[in-house]
Length: 280
Ligand code: C2E
Ligand code: MG
Ligand code: MG
Ligand code: MG
Image 1 (tube, helix red, strand yellow):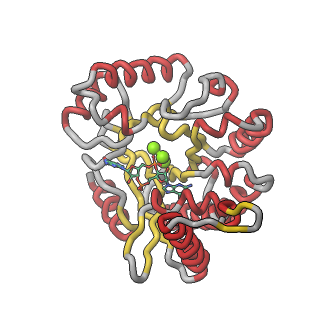
Image 2 (cartoon, helix red, strand yellow):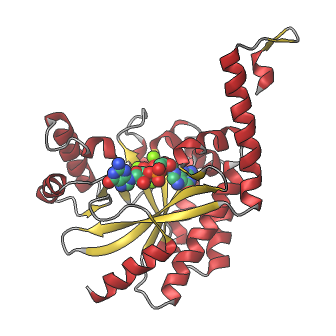
């Protein structure tokens, strides 16, 4: 905000600061309209069982289809959406749309799959978050076991008791919980015994060089061992190569997500993927 740069009523701007501030304001204003104007869209990326080559589920990934700028990646607008609070209505839209889409595919006759949805900490900390999830399930008619919420370790840093309460409530409803980008946050692992979670997502940064960098290989193996003792499922993210895939097979990491199988695709393309999965 402009006023953050002010001192004693004066506002000092360098040219760069001014640019950055204006860019932010413009982006914020556009983002405000984006929801009304239906510019957000969900892409879906398959999550695949590499032991028996089956589709296990999909992750919904947000895109902003700007009329002039084209498709904008979440990394370019989610931080500002979080800062301004716009992530709250956007996140609601994502949950609702992901649940509706998943239910729609089920109604088409495809075998039911789990839909993973990314949840911002800002969204999760809202008092009515559980209610928002419930509404998305009710409006869509999706059974809770076909919804998975991806949270990040950072959520364990504040209001731990309330966070645990919320997660327990969601879990009791039947919703699944996974930890996204596992191992990249700065939290202690203490939350692992407090959180009622189902799955760890091995961050792409460990997968990337897993076949060349012994440290990454050791980290992935350690995550596998920990998940096994804690009775958690694991999925590796960002798998692009055959070498990565065979490493993951070797360490018995059963589920993967990555370009090697498919990039995130729009709903109509995912539909084709579902059709191929049925006949495979
Ligand atoms: P994430 O949840 O960890 O999602 C994985 C990211 O890795 C996605 O980027 C996906 O497109 C990308 N990816 C998947 N497979 C590969 C691969 O094999 N190679 C490479 N290089 N990349 C791969 P995307 O879609 O740009 O999303 C970035 C981040 O934005 C997500 O990371 C997530 O944290 C956030 N995000 C996306 N959608 C939402 C949303 O609806 N709500 C919230 N709060 N955050 C979201
Ligand atoms: Mg994710
Ligand atoms: Mg991730
Ligand atoms: Mg992420």
